[in-house]
Length: 260
Image 1 (cartoon, helix red, strand yellow):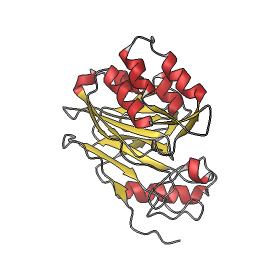
Image 2 (cartoon, rainbow, N blue to C red; image 1 turned 90 degrees about the vertical axis):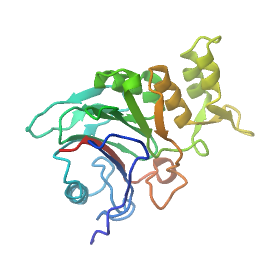
Image 3 (cartoon, one colour; image 1 turned 60 degrees about the vertical axis):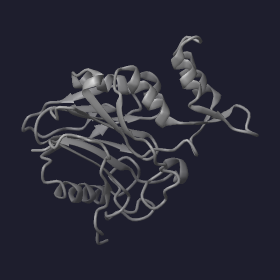
Image 4 (tube, rainbow, N blue to C red; image 1 turned 45 degrees about the vertical axis):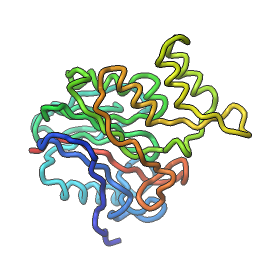
């Protein structure tokens, strides 16, 4: 299969010039259906040679990126710091990564979960996190902020394409878990409750606004410069993979790096 032109999105955020960032779409690669065409996930059943080819296409299109850290994501909260120098980077088990050297980058793979990119206002630190509802609940964003070594007020964040509040149906166990994280009298609990819209005709079900929840979590640790958060992977068949929509599907990559 001959690849078409790679198509990706650039975050709409005022990042310093030293920061490179993008999120791939499903367009421009060599994978066949149902992974067509720029699948970057090695764990979804696609042919290994096609995924490797897609990753090579991506790397050739990013000349300012020397070393890219891929993660073995497990819906956890571990955030690592990448400091491999000139050594090849092996895949590491984590759901977030931080880079601090020119030429280094980190990628997270998603197909409905929320990718969050971070950078410091001085352009010397960058990070990426993979946040499904479990990771959000248990602290992956907070751990990512800690991994940067910066105060929340020194960072900015961009919320990449994820399942939108129009489509993210969850059970009561999810809203109950988030609400239990706060005292009933706390303002955060009231704000958390607003991130869940009960579904008429479906007792025990609600629509979750993962973007609102991420903003609340980031604001709680001092990150107030938050951008993005207005897309839906389920609704946009053309550009995005969606596990909730398709089941067997590929993965997009959200990448942030320090330009080399």
